[in-house]
Image (tube, rainbow, N blue to C red; front, side, top):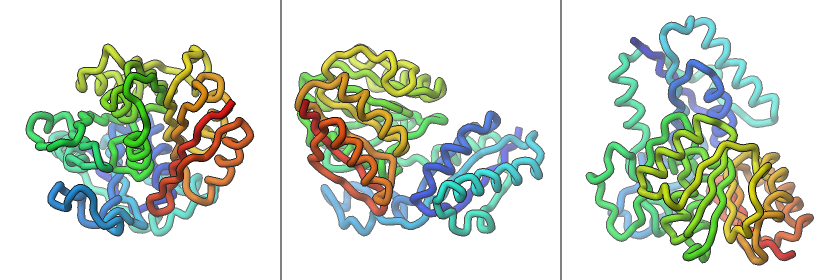
Length: 314
């Protein structure tokens, strides 16, 4: 079987919205995002950290694989419809309508291309994201390995919002504590919390594909005894357990809806880490945090993307 490999350049602030809509296509078997670095990901030889100009990119390259059995005229029109929807939401799609490329590849080439789009990746000061197929072959040094097989779920570590959340977690006191990850995608943030010492982590996602991917990643990291992955809509039905850290790397409106729910399940002084939005959208999130007695403790930025760390003060 052959697949259409479609690549399109999307301005970074609009890239997550485009990728999310493409993932809803029932025929799609993979969406990859790259372009956080202009010349590929950094390697340990750059040192413990590196000039943040390496992290800036105005355009993210999105790759999507569509089976050949889908008529070409149909998927081309649907692709334009996706870009129109994102543009109608107020996000600039740049030259994506006219500069995308498409080629037919064999099944084996599709699998190889998917793996090429997900190289080993150091993040922050402490983490090293390792693709499952390279586990045992990647030298991580003193960094904490996060073993991932992304499948169709969001959260490989290449996107700035995932990186910002991981960097925020590095500085939170998780040892011996409990954590909660909402909209967990691949489960990368839940895995990170457990590897930072959390004794119990609950991961929630509405998408059954993400739930399946997260459970497999949890098992691959040897953390099934400490991380529970469930399907759910935000925190509806989540037991009140006094979580020390709650993370949510989702869209702005979903974060705003989450804030009052998070206040009900967190312990006093607990930290809420939220991302998935750009600077222009952040004030609405800050206002929601203030309304529900969260004190803003830290703002992390990468390009236009923002992550906020807030402490609940009942």
